[in-house]
Length: 124
Image 1 (cartoon, rainbow, N blue to C red):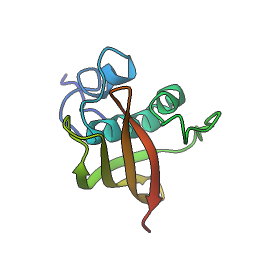
Image 2 (image 1 turned 30 degrees about the vertical axis):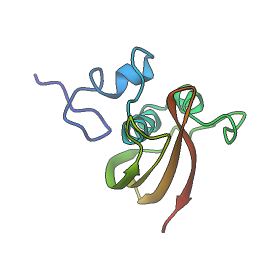
Image 3 (image 1 turned 60 degrees about the horizontal axis):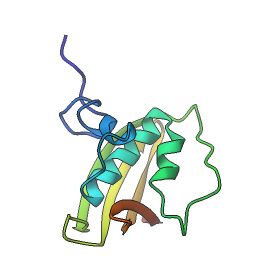
Image 4 (image 1 turned 45 degrees about the vertical axis):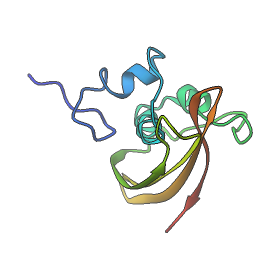
């Protein structure tokens, strides 16, 4: 039986895609990769990864995820900067969940060389 694709929308398996970021064996190389891995962490209920990849300046003290939330898909709508050659980047996306969707433009920055989520702006 084939391995299902990663919840982030890439065709690779979770282990080969976002799982390696969640497990700490690799770091997201771009802002988009971090965005995808953070979406996947929401799907998996991995609050510790979300906190680890949140900018220290804006990170909450704790994060309580709703265990009843069912994320159903991620669509990347736009990216600006956020490559290996940048220190900042933005990713505009729509994350769908049972009963609706979230449309956001997220800002990412590098801290000690690693991409982190800084903040976001809801668009709808």
